[in-house]
Image (tube, rainbow, N blue to C red):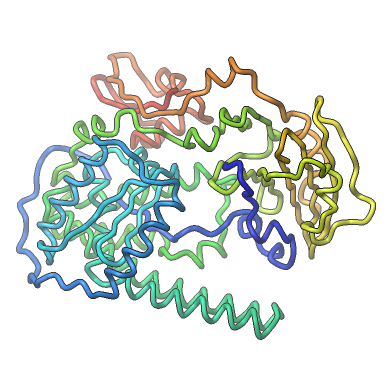
Length: 499
């Protein structure tokens, strides 16, 4: 979370945009990415007959879009992640994949993004992005190869340029609907229809990219079944990160990716053209050594989530949310959810020296502010205030704490009486505190660490060595590709998360 003004437009105005889901309410949209890739053994596939090759033809439009958007993507995802070993590993995988593609003369630029979210995507002109979060989740070269081959397929099939043009059209439709129809029911319908058209178009592209990507990866000698295994892992990862364990059907429908089961069946069918499972290089040990020490989770400059606590060493502040809330740190704000209809947002803004928290809450940025609801409170020795607001079927409790030249804001939202947000706000604000210098000094980012299992090591004995994460056993199995009840066995290199 940045110190500067971090409020997104939908929250800043607290107006009609609040009538969507909690996620639409509290999280700014990011670039849609692809999530694909898998694991294995040393045998290598003999490349099958290559696709008919053609000279690479990168149009001026592709190059222009990629070059223009590259800087924006880097900024949006927290910059590039500078790890020489991980960079060499991903570039080496890409070089093998390019040689096995139908355009071996094509040039690709791979960037590792400094984001904890497991994601990858491509831009026109050969720009490929993979997050450090995805690299930490992957277990071997074959899994990463499946991801990168999928993204290369989007570029080779000219999906990226088509998607950019489609997105531009969709944006125009939404803007016209908003301007002309003034957010009427017809306007909302027009915007939803444009998004559905874009989503359907993208799903068709994803299916083709899956098919092409498995072929490229298999011809490059990687395990062609890696894509199906990594899709399974990504589904488990999504479930692990879900605040409720339930699926959001609307969000899934509007996603740019087909359902996991549909994609899994397709990639298995494509992989079988290379032979039975067990064929191809997995490259587990060299891959794990390449990612040893990479940061897991939050970037240190944006604070840390430790269970139910958020701690920011640079700002020297911290707070704790109630037990039913699950925290997530983003570049725009700190978010928390307790089901689909109860959520929280925390951020900070600069404040004029003579403006009190009460005056700030009354300054007009809260739509639906309830008259007479602003109250002065004290949080330790800090001046603070609270207020209430209503917008549509959403109720809000807002808190503002003055500390130095900044005000830190808590916005709790609930729909239909889903949660006691008054108690949640009071409990969370009461926990807000300055961090002592000794506590700040002890805060370190979480990293991937490697160890080799001993003869008596089990998930039950290894998982407690994970630091700063919840549900240690479940996460240990996830990042090491272990199924329910499966043990790593002796003499196996495994990943743990530690500070």
